[in-house]
Image 1 (cartoon, each protein chain N blue to C red):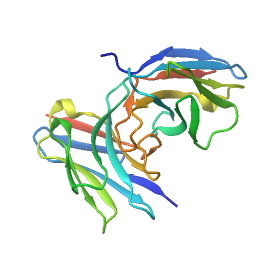
Image 2 (cartoon, rainbow over the protein chains, first blue to last red):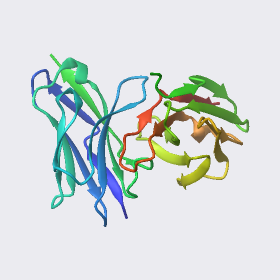
Image 3 (cartoon, rainbow over the protein chains, first blue to last red):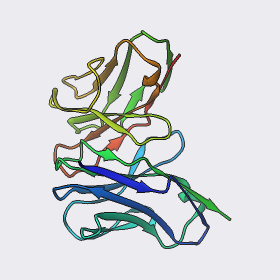
Image 4 (cartoon, rainbow over the protein chains, first blue to last red):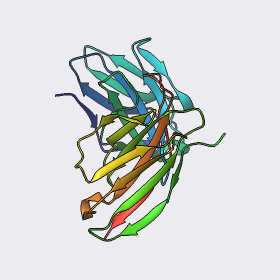
Length: 114
Length: 113
């Protein structure tokens, strides 16, 4: 079965520390992969996407993610966390080759402390 | 340019009632998708419409229906509301190209009592 899993529903980091949010997928075909961020009472905003081009993808706000086929992973990282990064982060996968039908993970809430 | 707009932003209904949610896509976007986000979970795909035709449907009962109008706006209808339908309903629009970005509205928060 095709699925996406986010490890850790809550992640807390200190301001300036490395952010690492984990995402693994299960798919029999090469997927398209996305990371979205959701701030309180807002919709989702695309951070970055992988669509079979470069495996290291750079996104907005200093985030990046690396597609590792052997590990079926697409972890999100940021070298130095900022207070404004506190939000809910969702990994999403398209198994149909279209960005319109996405399967989302359950989300990881990132807390940034002083 | 205006983003994806949804209305109403909040609404309260009782079990058994019907609800209609509305979405206006970004100008030039012809594809509209609907997602349901239950509290504490990720969004779940409900429908995709492109050029007024249903192009995809998620695992939702027939109580859920949608349509797209000639101006590409869309409505999501839910009949015979259940408590479990309480959620944030998100609309997203995109260009027709398959690997493009989904642009989400801020959602309509439905509470069923």
